[in-house]
Image 1 (spheres, rainbow, N blue to C red):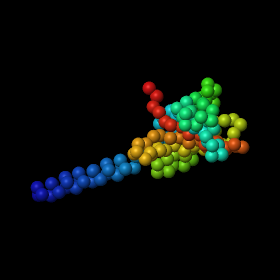
Image 2: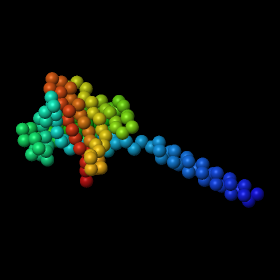
Image 3: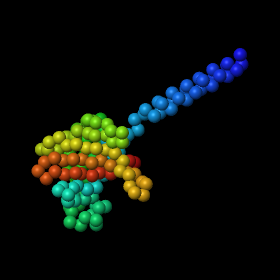
Image 4: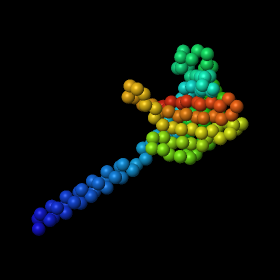
Length: 151
């Protein structure tokens, strides 16, 4: 009788462990647009870097330097570029295993923009949170941001 009690206890422990492992595997640990504030890095149009942050100015001396930050919370966006503030909205339209895609409306005169948030992995093994904003239009821009945690 004692062996059966031990066997039942072991089976219960196994079942609880399996349940906990399966629940932890199902949690959504993808990066989202709200996880970070986003510092502007570069803007590319037609394959050419046209705007850069101060930190990238020496790498692209022909580009215009822009100071920018973007923040997102509860479906609302707030972007500031060289002191000019833009407000807009965003919503999730697709979740991939390692990224989240958004419909974005930030500039009133533009069509809907799209954004993707994911970690960029570098050859040295490090990774950084990255947001890429796609701006349609005549010139069409891909705007790159790096995530940071505010103090």
